[in-house]
Image (cartoon, rainbow, N blue to C red; front, top):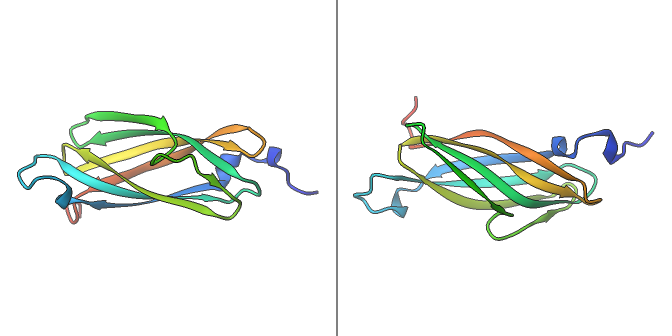
Length: 132
């Protein structure tokens, strides 16, 4: 029997990898804020195209301050990711503390029009060597 799309959740076959880095050069030296870049790689392990249509982020700093970010696509694009391929982009966040977290989800659409959510596990924004 051949596996069809309806036999699994398409979100289970989309992988999201995150790499973060501190960007001290992006703020004035006297700033009391902290800038971070995050590079996201979205990998489609399904046997059909998927389209990233919307993003949602919850950014939390070490003081518990939460900021929600929501919008169409990512970095001005709504990429279609073909089977076995990936889409990579870099964006950034500015927070009030040297450590914080981000988490969220992508709304995506399968080739047949079915919508699904891909959860993005919490990841840390932190100055290098601040957490041992």
